Each structure stands twice: as structure tokens, then as C-alpha cells.
Image (cartoon, rainbow, N blue to C red; front, side, top):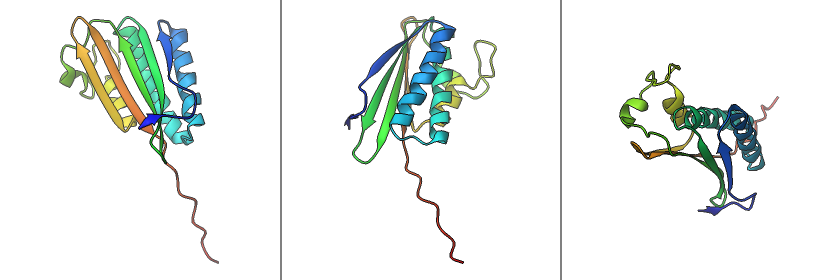
Length: 148
């Protein structure tokens, strides 16, 4: 797998609510340019929004790295959310639906995981967390015509 012929990797800061909106906008634009359908774009932007908010709220801020991917006939987008915050002490618990450390619905990590094809968390207590997700554009077959 190699970097896509589309725009190269980009790093976006996550340090404020305004940055969250910018991340969502840039993820949607990159996904659209790579041929993601509207539903696929929405899923990826939703996952990115949750993970960016976690980076800001729980990690004290950080950045996201957007990397377009080209696997021949498939285009993808890898997002790596990186912070230097306190890390996640109990990853299994954090990935459980309904668990929250911040008063939310507890669907951030587990919800984001369900919205993408690939999901990985690397976290060391006291050193920070990197959550990497990858989504692939799938081609929707053309509608069948019904003979009359």
C-alpha cells in the first residue's frame, strides 16, 4: 500500500473547539476527493469528530495526521489522533459501550471503532495516546434496471 496520488499527508492541530470544526471539514473534503460516498463520508467524519474531541478533552490537545492511501483499485484515508496526555489506564474498559470518564454517553472510542474498517489504540499511562483509524472507499454497484 502506498500514499495516494491525491494530496499528501497533512497534520492538523487539535487545541480548541474551532480546531474540531476544521478537522471535521478537512476529513470530509479528503474523503470526498478520494471517492467516498456520502454515507461513508458521514461515518468517517463522525468517527473523526469523536476522536478529535477525545484528543482535546482527555488528552489536553494534540494533532491528527491525515494520510490518503492507494491500494490499487481502492482508495482509503488513515487518521492518526495523537496526544501527550495522561493516556488510557484501562483500554478494555474505555472501549466498552457506555463507559465514560467525562460525563458523556460513553460511545466515543467504541462508537468510532464501529464506523471504520480498521481501528488501533496505542496508549501508555502518563505518556499519551495515539488512535489510528482507516476507512476505505467502497464502490457502490450501479442500480439494477428492472425489465418492463
